[in-house]
Image (cartoon, rainbow, N blue to C red; front, side, top):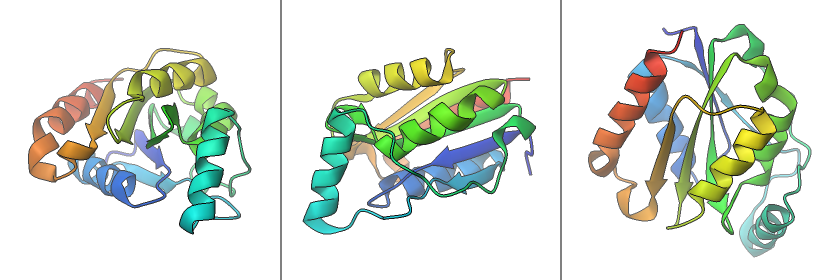
Length: 160
């Protein structure tokens, strides 16, 4: 187990969770799911997600179980909503990312928005990521993003 790396992610529909688990399996990191006190379900949950993303809100999140400051590298990931990083990820990054010496970002997206999402995370984290990974809707199957995921994990694994 690579106890120098923590993967923190939010997933509403399960795609980002699948990528986070692939990353965990590839590098043997600890994993933390970012959870909200009031999960988003159905059409109202989707509307709330889009509104929060566009407004760049930072909603409440549940207490964490892994302290990011105990790790050398923090991988932060989530879905892109309306061209922005999912708001629960913004909350997590603002509260906890500064305690980890190094960060890397990953996201799932329908087809656009990763650049804006990563720019937001850079500001919230106060530094550049060591690596980034984007998995769009056309490349959700492990076989179709294997090369990009491997490249990302290799870059993350070399961070000291």
